[in-house]
Length: 212
Image 1: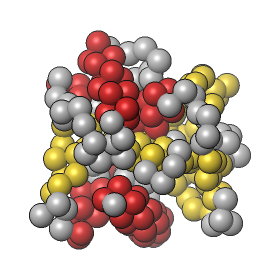
Image 2 (image 1 turned 135 degrees about the horizontal axis):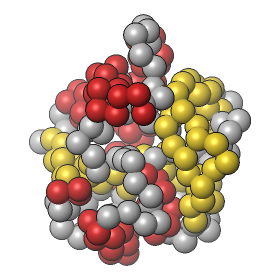
Image 3 (image 1 turned 180 degrees about the vertical axis):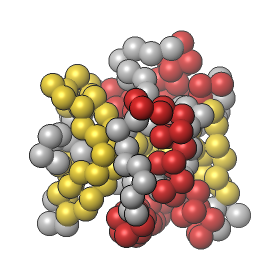
Image 4 (image 1 turned 60 degrees about the vertical axis):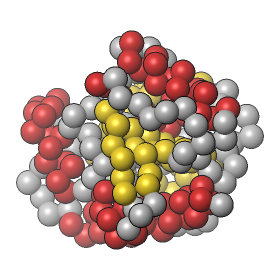
């Protein structure tokens, strides 16, 4: 079976719907907990970077180790699919910047894609990305222009969270309690299904490009 590395940064933010995509595609997902000091070897292997409640420009010592690992892997040509904190780390490694927003962007949000598609997605972030040189902007929202970008075919960053399914939201709400701005006690199954359909197609394309 093909294998794919995934880096998790927080115990309550796991692969979510990405695990289901990998199962459906017959891909073994190797999960590394960067917050526990786990990172794959530096190399060309494709990797997915998840989010987490940390500042991409600062944060704990293990995050600095991940920044160094990411820069070294990018230098070797690694394909990266990065979400929220991961997308910020990717942008920084490629020469972009990250700045604090005037107001956080949270909950279900409409994201508009360059191809004309619109999708309701979940958000929870206080920082925004200024894109690195050569990046192509792929999606925006009313509050945050840089919702999705690409640098070449195999380096993709998303500020929103397509991996968060219903179980992900329950785990986050349980962990962060009243601090969490995510929905509670409502039926969002249709929204999650639409996001998963989008995620499958997007990951299929990235994985095909990364595997070439």
